[in-house]
Image (cartoon, rainbow, N blue to C red; front, side):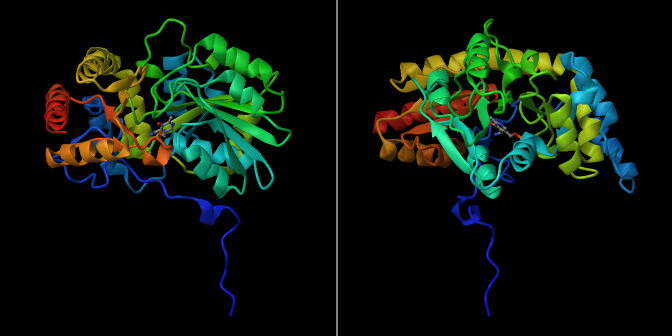
Length: 362
Ligand code: PMP
Protein backbone atom coordinates (compact mmCIF):
# COMPACT_ATOMS: atom_id res chain seq x y z
CA UNK A 1 0.00 0.00 0.00
CA UNK A 2 1.36 3.44 -0.91
CA UNK A 3 1.22 6.14 1.69
CA UNK A 4 -0.07 9.58 0.82
CA UNK A 5 2.71 12.15 0.44
CA UNK A 6 2.38 15.86 1.23
CA UNK A 7 2.92 18.27 -1.63
CA UNK A 8 6.56 18.96 -2.64
CA UNK A 9 8.27 21.48 -0.38
CA UNK A 10 6.32 20.71 2.77
CA UNK A 11 8.81 18.21 4.18
CA UNK A 12 11.58 20.78 3.57
CA UNK A 13 9.97 23.05 6.17
CA UNK A 14 11.77 23.32 9.49
CA UNK A 15 8.89 23.96 11.94
CA UNK A 16 8.88 27.36 13.65
CA UNK A 17 10.13 27.19 17.25
CA UNK A 18 8.65 29.90 19.51
CA UNK A 19 10.96 31.93 21.73
CA UNK A 20 9.46 30.91 25.04
CA UNK A 21 8.85 27.23 24.54
CA UNK A 22 6.84 26.91 27.75
CA UNK A 23 4.71 30.02 27.60
CA UNK A 24 2.59 28.88 30.53
CA UNK A 25 5.46 29.32 32.99
CA UNK A 26 4.57 32.80 34.16
CA UNK A 27 7.36 32.82 36.75
CA UNK A 28 9.88 33.59 34.02
CA UNK A 29 10.71 36.93 32.42
CA UNK A 30 9.95 36.22 28.79
CA UNK A 31 12.21 38.49 26.76
CA UNK A 32 12.13 36.05 23.84
CA UNK A 33 8.91 36.85 21.95
CA UNK A 34 8.71 40.62 21.38
CA UNK A 35 5.57 40.81 23.51
CA UNK A 36 4.47 44.06 25.15
CA UNK A 37 5.79 44.47 28.70
CA UNK A 38 2.77 46.65 29.52
CA UNK A 39 0.29 43.97 28.50
CA UNK A 40 -2.99 44.70 26.76
CA UNK A 41 -5.06 47.80 27.49
CA UNK A 42 -7.46 47.22 30.43
CA UNK A 43 -10.27 48.28 28.06
CA UNK A 44 -9.26 45.55 25.59
CA UNK A 45 -9.21 43.00 28.42
CA UNK A 46 -12.72 44.06 29.43
CA UNK A 47 -13.98 43.88 25.83
CA UNK A 48 -12.56 40.35 25.63
CA UNK A 49 -14.35 39.34 28.85
CA UNK A 50 -17.63 40.83 27.62
CA UNK A 51 -17.66 38.42 24.67
CA UNK A 52 -18.03 35.52 27.14
CA UNK A 53 -21.79 36.10 27.21
CA UNK A 54 -22.00 35.80 23.40
CA UNK A 55 -19.86 32.77 22.66
CA UNK A 56 -22.70 31.05 20.80
CA UNK A 57 -22.74 33.78 18.13
CA UNK A 58 -20.61 33.79 15.00
CA UNK A 59 -18.39 36.84 14.72
CA UNK A 60 -18.89 39.49 12.03
CA UNK A 61 -17.33 37.71 9.05
CA UNK A 62 -16.32 41.01 7.47
CA UNK A 63 -14.86 42.47 10.72
CA UNK A 64 -16.64 45.69 9.74
CA UNK A 65 -16.29 47.65 12.99
CA UNK A 66 -12.71 46.53 13.50
CA UNK A 67 -11.75 47.60 9.97
CA UNK A 68 -13.51 50.91 10.55
CA UNK A 69 -11.51 51.44 13.76
CA UNK A 70 -8.21 50.59 12.03
CA UNK A 71 -9.12 52.87 9.12
CA UNK A 72 -9.78 55.77 11.49
CA UNK A 73 -6.66 55.19 13.57
CA UNK A 74 -4.34 54.93 10.54
CA UNK A 75 -6.17 57.23 8.08
CA UNK A 76 -6.98 54.48 5.56
CA UNK A 77 -9.92 53.23 3.48
CA UNK A 78 -11.65 50.36 5.37
CA UNK A 79 -12.55 48.64 2.08
CA UNK A 80 -8.88 47.99 1.47
CA UNK A 81 -8.24 46.36 4.84
CA UNK A 82 -8.24 42.61 5.45
CA UNK A 83 -8.03 41.19 8.96
CA UNK A 84 -6.80 37.71 9.80
CA UNK A 85 -5.49 35.44 12.55
CA UNK A 86 -2.19 37.21 13.06
CA UNK A 87 -0.23 38.89 10.30
CA UNK A 88 1.50 35.54 9.80
CA UNK A 89 -1.78 34.31 8.32
CA UNK A 90 -1.77 37.22 5.87
CA UNK A 91 1.77 36.31 4.82
CA UNK A 92 0.45 32.82 4.13
CA UNK A 93 -2.66 34.00 2.25
CA UNK A 94 -0.64 36.38 0.06
CA UNK A 95 1.85 33.68 -0.87
CA UNK A 96 -0.86 31.09 -1.53
CA UNK A 97 -2.73 33.54 -3.73
CA UNK A 98 0.20 34.69 -5.82
CA UNK A 99 2.94 32.03 -5.78
CA UNK A 100 3.16 28.32 -6.42
CA UNK A 101 5.56 25.71 -7.83
CA UNK A 102 8.26 27.31 -9.96
CA UNK A 103 7.71 30.76 -8.44
CA UNK A 104 10.12 32.60 -6.15
CA UNK A 105 9.42 34.48 -2.95
CA UNK A 106 12.24 36.91 -2.20
CA UNK A 107 13.18 38.27 1.23
CA UNK A 108 16.24 39.50 3.10
CA UNK A 109 18.97 37.28 4.53
CA UNK A 110 17.73 37.57 8.12
CA UNK A 111 14.07 38.09 7.29
CA UNK A 112 11.16 36.76 9.36
CA UNK A 113 11.03 32.93 9.29
CA UNK A 114 7.40 32.73 8.24
CA UNK A 115 8.33 33.97 4.73
CA UNK A 116 10.27 30.81 3.77
CA UNK A 117 7.88 28.57 5.74
CA UNK A 118 4.81 29.88 3.89
CA UNK A 119 6.65 29.89 0.55
CA UNK A 120 7.52 26.21 0.93
CA UNK A 121 3.99 25.39 2.12
CA UNK A 122 2.72 26.80 -1.18
CA UNK A 123 5.30 24.82 -3.17
CA UNK A 124 7.15 28.03 -4.09
CA UNK A 125 10.88 28.63 -3.70
CA UNK A 126 12.16 30.96 -0.98
CA UNK A 127 15.12 33.09 -2.11
CA UNK A 128 17.21 35.36 0.12
CA UNK A 129 19.18 38.50 -0.74
CA UNK A 130 22.21 39.48 1.38
CA UNK A 131 21.93 42.32 3.88
CA UNK A 132 24.46 45.06 4.52
CA UNK A 133 25.36 45.55 8.19
CA UNK A 134 22.33 43.47 9.18
CA UNK A 135 20.15 45.90 7.24
CA UNK A 136 17.94 45.42 4.16
CA UNK A 137 20.03 46.13 1.06
CA UNK A 138 17.80 47.44 -1.72
CA UNK A 139 20.42 46.87 -4.43
CA UNK A 140 20.95 43.26 -3.33
CA UNK A 141 17.19 42.64 -3.38
CA UNK A 142 16.87 44.13 -6.86
CA UNK A 143 19.81 42.04 -8.07
CA UNK A 144 18.11 38.88 -6.78
CA UNK A 145 14.90 39.42 -8.78
CA UNK A 146 14.34 36.91 -11.60
CA UNK A 147 11.47 36.36 -14.06
CA UNK A 148 10.11 33.88 -11.49
CA UNK A 149 9.91 36.37 -8.60
CA UNK A 150 6.30 36.91 -7.52
CA UNK A 151 6.53 38.56 -4.12
CA UNK A 152 9.20 40.44 -2.15
CA UNK A 153 8.88 40.62 1.64
CA UNK A 154 10.63 43.35 3.60
CA UNK A 155 10.02 43.59 7.33
CA UNK A 156 10.65 47.22 8.25
CA UNK A 157 11.94 47.34 10.93
CA UNK A 158 13.16 43.81 10.44
CA UNK A 159 12.82 41.01 12.95
CA UNK A 160 15.24 39.76 14.31
CA UNK A 161 17.84 42.39 13.37
CA UNK A 162 15.81 45.44 14.47
CA UNK A 163 17.21 47.59 11.67
CA UNK A 164 15.05 49.67 9.32
CA UNK A 165 15.37 51.37 5.96
CA UNK A 166 14.09 54.87 5.17
CA UNK A 167 10.91 55.67 3.27
CA UNK A 168 12.99 56.80 0.30
CA UNK A 169 14.85 53.48 0.24
CA UNK A 170 11.53 51.60 0.25
CA UNK A 171 10.37 53.82 -2.65
CA UNK A 172 13.59 53.09 -4.52
CA UNK A 173 12.98 49.38 -4.02
CA UNK A 174 9.43 49.67 -5.37
CA UNK A 175 10.60 51.69 -8.38
CA UNK A 176 13.27 49.12 -9.19
CA UNK A 177 11.00 46.08 -9.02
CA UNK A 178 9.08 44.85 -12.06
CA UNK A 179 5.47 46.06 -11.95
CA UNK A 180 4.07 42.54 -11.65
CA UNK A 181 6.06 41.74 -8.48
CA UNK A 182 4.13 42.40 -5.26
CA UNK A 183 6.11 44.22 -2.57
CA UNK A 184 4.90 43.27 0.91
CA UNK A 185 6.05 45.76 3.54
CA UNK A 186 5.75 43.98 6.87
CA UNK A 187 5.31 46.81 9.36
CA UNK A 188 4.81 44.65 12.47
CA UNK A 189 7.01 47.00 14.55
CA UNK A 190 6.09 50.30 12.84
CA UNK A 191 4.32 51.72 15.87
CA UNK A 192 7.60 51.79 17.82
CA UNK A 193 9.68 53.63 15.22
CA UNK A 194 10.64 57.22 16.03
CA UNK A 195 13.00 58.04 13.17
CA UNK A 196 11.74 60.91 11.00
CA UNK A 197 12.80 59.34 7.70
CA UNK A 198 10.69 56.22 8.36
CA UNK A 199 7.29 55.35 6.95
CA UNK A 200 5.17 52.23 7.42
CA UNK A 201 4.56 52.41 3.66
CA UNK A 202 0.82 53.08 3.35
CA UNK A 203 1.38 55.88 0.83
CA UNK A 204 2.67 53.26 -1.63
CA UNK A 205 -0.56 51.21 -1.57
CA UNK A 206 -2.46 52.38 -4.64
CA UNK A 207 -4.95 50.95 -7.10
CA UNK A 208 -3.14 51.98 -10.28
CA UNK A 209 -0.02 49.91 -9.81
CA UNK A 210 -1.78 47.54 -7.37
CA UNK A 211 1.47 45.94 -6.26
CA UNK A 212 2.18 47.03 -2.66
CA UNK A 213 0.69 45.55 0.51
CA UNK A 214 1.42 46.72 4.06
CA UNK A 215 1.01 44.34 7.02
CA UNK A 216 0.42 45.22 10.67
CA UNK A 217 -0.18 43.22 13.82
CA UNK A 218 -1.95 43.64 17.14
CA UNK A 219 0.61 41.29 18.75
CA UNK A 220 3.26 43.91 19.51
CA UNK A 221 2.48 47.44 20.73
CA UNK A 222 -1.21 46.58 21.32
CA UNK A 223 -0.28 43.60 23.48
CA UNK A 224 -2.81 41.16 21.97
CA UNK A 225 -0.47 38.37 20.83
CA UNK A 226 -2.66 35.70 22.45
CA UNK A 227 -5.61 36.68 20.25
CA UNK A 228 -3.80 36.33 16.92
CA UNK A 229 -4.91 39.47 15.13
CA UNK A 230 -3.25 41.12 12.15
CA UNK A 231 -4.29 43.19 9.15
CA UNK A 232 -3.27 44.04 5.62
CA UNK A 233 -3.69 47.30 3.70
CA UNK A 234 -4.07 46.31 0.05
CA UNK A 235 -5.01 47.68 -3.34
CA UNK A 236 -8.68 46.82 -4.15
CA UNK A 237 -7.70 43.93 -6.44
CA UNK A 238 -5.55 42.23 -3.82
CA UNK A 239 -8.16 42.82 -1.10
CA UNK A 240 -10.68 41.11 -3.39
CA UNK A 241 -8.35 38.13 -3.88
CA UNK A 242 -7.66 37.75 -0.14
CA UNK A 243 -11.37 38.03 0.65
CA UNK A 244 -12.01 35.05 -1.63
CA UNK A 245 -9.55 32.74 0.11
CA UNK A 246 -9.68 33.77 3.77
CA UNK A 247 -12.00 31.82 6.07
CA UNK A 248 -15.59 33.05 6.23
CA UNK A 249 -15.38 33.91 9.96
CA UNK A 250 -11.61 34.15 10.10
CA UNK A 251 -11.29 36.59 13.00
CA UNK A 252 -12.81 35.59 16.34
CA UNK A 253 -15.33 37.83 18.09
CA UNK A 254 -12.93 38.18 21.04
CA UNK A 255 -10.17 39.42 18.76
CA UNK A 256 -12.43 41.89 17.00
CA UNK A 257 -13.79 43.33 20.26
CA UNK A 258 -10.38 43.54 21.93
CA UNK A 259 -8.78 45.03 18.81
CA UNK A 260 -11.36 47.81 18.64
CA UNK A 261 -10.91 48.63 22.34
CA UNK A 262 -7.11 48.52 22.06
CA UNK A 263 -7.14 51.04 19.21
CA UNK A 264 -9.40 53.35 21.19
CA UNK A 265 -7.06 53.32 24.21
CA UNK A 266 -4.51 55.67 22.70
CA UNK A 267 -3.12 56.53 26.15
CA UNK A 268 -2.14 52.89 26.68
CA UNK A 269 -0.46 52.72 23.27
CA UNK A 270 1.40 55.97 24.00
CA UNK A 271 2.56 54.54 27.33
CA UNK A 272 3.83 51.40 25.58
CA UNK A 273 5.72 53.54 23.08
CA UNK A 274 7.19 55.76 25.81
CA UNK A 275 8.28 52.70 27.81
CA UNK A 276 10.04 51.33 24.75
CA UNK A 277 11.70 54.68 23.97
CA UNK A 278 13.09 54.74 27.50
CA UNK A 279 14.20 51.14 27.92
CA UNK A 280 15.43 50.08 24.49
CA UNK A 281 18.20 52.72 24.46
CA UNK A 282 18.95 51.81 28.08
CA UNK A 283 19.37 48.14 27.12
CA UNK A 284 21.49 49.09 24.10
CA UNK A 285 23.79 51.25 26.27
CA UNK A 286 24.11 48.67 29.04
CA UNK A 287 24.80 45.83 26.61
CA UNK A 288 27.42 47.90 24.81
CA UNK A 289 29.02 48.77 28.18
CA UNK A 290 29.38 45.02 28.78
CA UNK A 291 31.45 44.88 25.60
CA UNK A 292 28.78 43.12 23.54
CA UNK A 293 28.09 44.02 19.91
CA UNK A 294 24.58 45.49 19.68
CA UNK A 295 22.82 46.04 16.34
CA UNK A 296 21.02 49.44 16.45
CA UNK A 297 17.29 48.71 16.67
CA UNK A 298 14.14 50.64 15.79
CA UNK A 299 11.80 48.02 17.27
CA UNK A 300 10.97 46.67 20.74
CA UNK A 301 13.95 44.31 20.87
CA UNK A 302 17.70 44.27 20.31
CA UNK A 303 19.97 41.76 18.68
CA UNK A 304 23.21 41.24 20.55
CA UNK A 305 26.22 39.31 19.27
CA UNK A 306 28.53 37.22 21.40
CA UNK A 307 32.03 35.95 20.52
CA UNK A 308 30.66 32.79 18.95
CA UNK A 309 27.85 30.23 19.02
CA UNK A 310 29.21 28.50 22.14
CA UNK A 311 29.30 31.74 24.13
CA UNK A 312 25.80 32.74 23.08
CA UNK A 313 24.45 29.30 23.98
CA UNK A 314 26.14 29.45 27.37
CA UNK A 315 24.69 32.94 27.94
CA UNK A 316 21.23 31.67 27.00
CA UNK A 317 21.52 28.79 29.50
CA UNK A 318 22.88 31.06 32.22
CA UNK A 319 19.96 33.45 31.78
CA UNK A 320 17.42 30.59 31.79
CA UNK A 321 18.79 29.55 35.17
CA UNK A 322 18.02 33.08 36.32
CA UNK A 323 14.47 32.76 34.90
CA UNK A 324 15.12 35.20 32.05
CA UNK A 325 14.26 33.77 28.62
CA UNK A 326 16.19 35.23 25.67
CA UNK A 327 15.81 34.18 22.05
CA UNK A 328 18.47 31.99 20.41
CA UNK A 329 18.96 32.90 16.76
CA UNK A 330 20.25 29.69 15.17
CA UNK A 331 17.17 29.42 12.96
CA UNK A 332 18.13 32.80 11.46
CA UNK A 333 21.76 31.73 10.83
CA UNK A 334 22.81 34.04 13.65
CA UNK A 335 23.84 31.41 16.16
CA UNK A 336 26.37 33.77 17.79
CA UNK A 337 23.52 36.14 18.68
CA UNK A 338 20.59 36.39 21.10
CA UNK A 339 17.55 38.60 20.65
CA UNK A 340 16.36 40.46 23.74
CA UNK A 341 12.86 41.98 23.92
CA UNK A 342 12.43 45.18 25.92
CA UNK A 343 10.73 44.05 29.14
CA UNK A 344 9.45 45.62 32.32
CA UNK A 345 11.99 47.67 34.28
CA UNK A 346 12.89 44.85 36.69
CA UNK A 347 13.17 42.37 33.82
CA UNK A 348 15.54 44.64 31.88
CA UNK A 349 17.64 45.11 35.00
CA UNK A 350 17.66 41.37 35.72
CA UNK A 351 18.74 40.76 32.15
CA UNK A 352 21.72 43.11 32.36
CA UNK A 353 22.69 41.90 35.85
CA UNK A 354 22.58 38.29 34.64
CA UNK A 355 24.66 38.97 31.55
CA UNK A 356 27.19 40.94 33.61
CA UNK A 357 27.51 37.98 35.94
CA UNK A 358 27.82 35.61 32.97
CA UNK A 359 30.56 37.64 31.29
CA UNK A 360 32.51 37.97 34.55
CA UNK A 361 32.51 34.21 34.85
CA UNK A 362 33.32 33.64 31.17
N1 PMP B 1 6.05 39.89 10.88
C1 PMP B 1 7.10 40.06 11.68
C2 PMP B 1 8.28 40.81 11.15
C3 PMP B 1 7.10 39.53 12.97
O1 PMP B 1 8.18 39.67 13.76
C4 PMP B 1 5.96 38.84 13.45
C5 PMP B 1 5.88 38.26 14.82
N2 PMP B 1 6.98 37.64 15.31
C6 PMP B 1 4.89 38.68 12.57
C7 PMP B 1 4.96 39.22 11.31
C8 PMP B 1 3.68 37.88 12.93
O2 PMP B 1 2.93 38.48 13.90
P1 PMP B 1 1.49 37.92 14.27
O3 PMP B 1 1.22 36.70 13.47
O4 PMP B 1 1.54 37.66 15.74
O5 PMP B 1 0.55 39.03 13.91
